[in-house]
Image 1 (cartoon, rainbow over the protein chains, first blue to last red):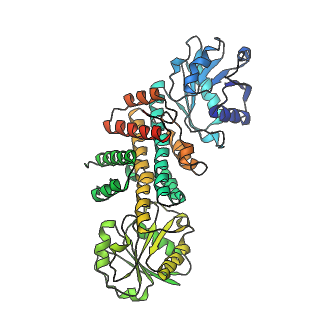
Image 2 (image 1 turned 120 degrees about the vertical axis):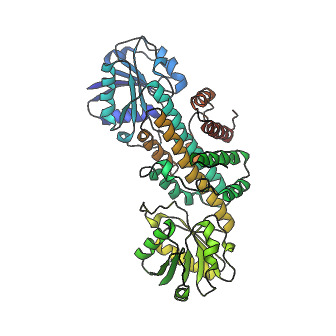
Image 3 (image 1 turned 45 degrees about the vertical axis):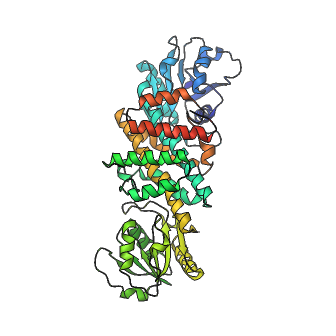
Length: 242
Length: 242
């Protein structure tokens, strides 16, 4: 039985609490609202204390916790392990997924990236992670930083591209729903081909005529730049130039 | 019973032929290899002739077909209806999906965008489209051009972003598989929220510190520009500036 305390009231904390409650061999000792005053007495009864708060708040929340016997971890993709005080046993417990309270998710499919400073703590985190997820990865702080960067591309930037496409649809009386099967298929395709192999479109086939006409159709200067830049990068990837 | 002739040997033709063969009330009269000499005699026995060849080849293939009694359509998102000779009854039958011969797909979920010049022909195309797909849209040539542009964003550009993320993973000994659940969830999320609502990440929360550190981590100058440009566009979308 691993005893866990969870600090934070956000999306990550919400989903972790749910996963721990459903798991066997985990006891959620306490969930703590980091925005109120809290005592840290209960930590003496925890094996792991998970700080699941926003990146900017991690240091502040961690500073309220007096060094104690439990393993202190945060859940951020972008914050290094050593931003937690070295007076603690420290670690990271980062779910590489976009989480919203309003959307349920199968936690067993969420990749959990773990990091710790000793073999013993790594083993403890691995054990805890494997109780709630089938996908556990040991990742260093440097690697995690790069993974977070890659995640910004595939999540934040992809979503913004969906937003641009929504705007193109709205401006032309087209239902965005027409694009949804294409969006789903694009995401699914990389389970069968590498993105390098899956690439299609005007830039892939060096169809400069279509690229030019698309640039003329785009009125928003930011969208125009994004179109040019991505097309140029695709052309270069396959050894062509604009 | 609608009688169809299909010209072309590519991905679209492959999937259309399969869908027509499985459908009731459609007879596939002939499939024609456009790269060889072909007679057009059989067209007198067809209601619809579908030219499913690459954009650049449509005019050339269409020019080989002598005006006849059947409705001539192409399957391109980017080519206008009037690129087919006006001596024919003309139309468009555009599946808004990325299709590969190597990947099976449920055709009933593919949006079919149709266009024709008369009510009668539009009715015929709608009837044919509804025999193989549950998602049929009447779209003008102007709208289709904009939809194709939106499709370049959500398919081609999104896939290139996956490629960039693959490179970041490879360069840092990270398995790309870690990102696959995030990619799937990002695509699925827009079925529950608009992309505008679903946006998260450093640019969304105006976290300029993380944006700067990410730009330093990116060594490829094209990826750097793409990161800047997309971040700037996200910031502007939510009323902020870099």
